[in-house]
Amino acid sequence: MTTKARSRFGVCGRNAQSSLSVLADMKGIARRILFHMPSYRISRLVPDEPVQAHLRAGEHNSSLSSAKRRAPVDPGRAAPAYVATAAAGATAAWSILGQADCRQAAPRMRELHEAFVERGYWASPTVTRAWGRHTSPVLESVHLAAVASALWPNAALRYRTALPTPSMPTTTPSQVTARARKTPGAVWPLWAVRLNPVPQVRDHLAASLAASLLL
Image (cartoon, rainbow, N blue to C red; front, side, top):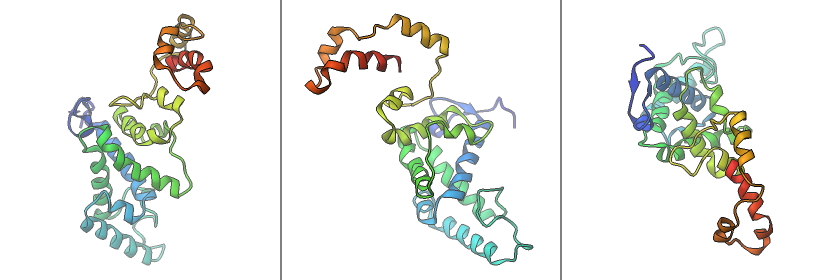
């Protein structure tokens, strides 16, 4: 497979990605689903039959002595040794990436994030950058759409979560500096008056809007 092959389906329908990146996205999601998600959460993404086959393979593997095990007790740490485990992971990943857009994929990705929380982890907005060398920006967008409700307002602005396709900031430090020099310390009064917020924040609104504009 070459990196020039393009995939235009699922969440990549409007933003074609290389086939290598799509496979990297699937691998990144599948590994974390197999490692972090309990069976009841996987069942929300995968039909019952492959889930049960995956569980039976795991039970069989765990019952073997350490010398005879074909895979780690916790799947997701290495390439699956059992077809059923690989099928469950791939199907779960595709149940997310196969959706029509990021908004439809987000609730399914949120199952994985909630599993992170249950295990004592936190899914930062930039965590998918560590999920593989060739993962795509579309994976970042799905992830950001999934965590949007948990972000502070300033982070929601920074990662453009109100857009159909959230994304990481692309401006360089020099661009930010140039824009800051052209933005007033208090945003234009006419715009501030139009928003007409509650009195408790009105005194600070113009300055907050100027900061929000840069974000």
